[in-house]
Image 1 (cartoon, rainbow, N blue to C red):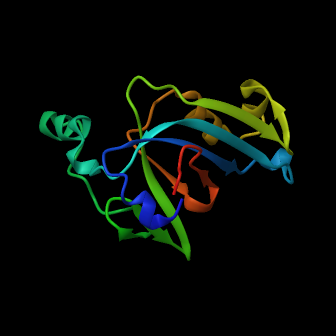
Image 2: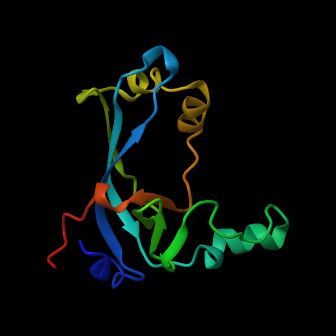
Length: 149
């Protein structure tokens, strides 16, 4: 999907498949860890206007929304640029549970086996089970199976 087409998806729910890589613990140096996620995500939302964010600010659970911690907006609130790469901002859809497949050196493994290759901090984060309000995924790693244009 082109950036221009992606930016026409404000408020839409999109089928997205993306692959991410994780750095292994030093004991597993040289091992390639990938995760493939397939699910329904929203696009074109303003993070600061999400009800969960506004409620957390109002209750004092969090501070005001700050600028991006890395990169800069190429097109707010869709696309971030960082070190010459383009990233899409995606929002998990309530009630939708993405399917996830885990791979070690290209071979599919169980989630538990995959977690065993991570650094302790990355493993703790992965095991937390917290569902993020938004995710940022490298555009080149995204596929949009239902896109016709």
